[in-house]
Length: 207
Ligand code: ADP
Image (cartoon, protein in one colour):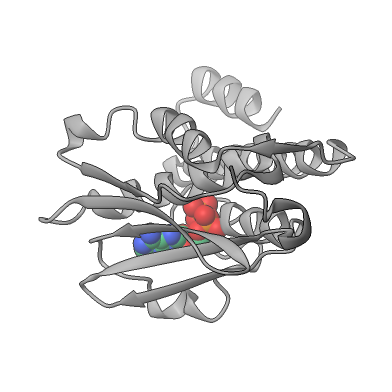
């Protein structure tokens, strides 16, 4: 309605101060953004029960990246994978974990856009209790003003960002019993690592 009112005003009167039209454009854009946030939250919470399936995490990483890195090589981003060969299958909600990998990789690619050196690496390793997935970039590092609140919702440094990606990642990882942490060095890059605990009873039969 705001957008239509703006268009009607603009086309029927020559005397509308340009600032008024600009503010109406901004109001419309913010209403749109609020709508997107609500839709995104609803999608997340309406999913209800998680569907836990024994999964080959390396295969899932490759699947998720296929989508996330679309267009990355045109932007000069070099993507490398270092996947452990000794991973047991792990019980996860595939769609949710795909979303985590996708969000982390998209954030990294976006961060790299402003940098000379554009490298994204994804690795998996097995520890005694968990599988660790790391998504690392050679971007600018985390902005200081956001470092303390990184995983809280609605904290963003992007003009059109929703600040929901990392908070959704944390909810998903924690609902799997894992943890997600970020380390970053200004001007040198950022590394996100999340863990997915192994059910050592069941999954000690690796073969
Ligand atoms: P959004 O992408 O909508 O801003 P996120 O929760 O995914 O929301 O990210 C929050 C903020 O964290 C981003 O706005 C950005 O400032 C910062 N950030 C996330 N990932 C990276 C990264 N790999 N490098 C630098 N900054 C990052």
